[in-house]
Image (cartoon, rainbow, N blue to C red):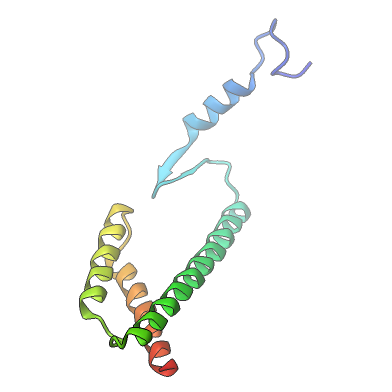
Length: 124
């Protein structure tokens, strides 16, 4: 009999195992890890996150391109300093909410904004 089907013995059930795993789990930066996490599984998780980051950058770039098209159609300037300031403020606040270095997050957003502006200028 398996542990989760034997009701008449003192063997561990799946629920007991889950409790034990949760007991030895720890929170670190919002990610739950267990002592049994292998280096390979952590690298696999990073690989998945990296793919998601690239997908999000692609989505953001697509929307920024759409904004550039609307700006061109409406005769608006490429640069909107007020909007850029709001994006940077939001980036800093989001960084703080996730306990990430705000300077790092703002640097990433500054780079994304600058690359979008270069592309906007080239397409006009």
